[in-house]
Image (cartoon, rainbow, N blue to C red; front, side, top):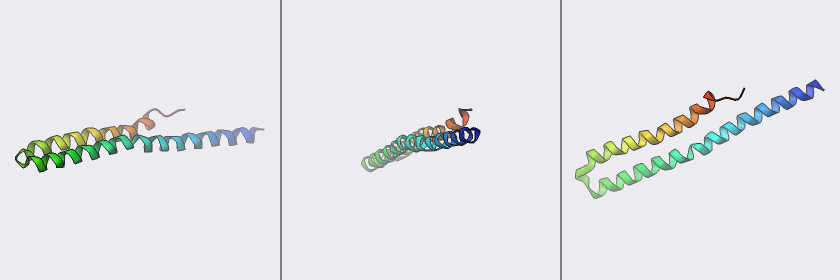
Length: 84
């Protein structure tokens, strides 16, 4: 009887680990789309107004950094709040 309980506990931990990986994969979609939008619109803005390129580039990298923070938080938060 105890061997069955250990097997069930191991299976439960395995499922939780896999769900965490799937959750992070889904969470990375948002920042990926955000980064694509930031760079796409920045390139479009630079093509329309080349004289404003330094300001646009600064704002582009600021937007990229803010989007990337979301992806890094999605990676770190599951390790901080692990179920015990």
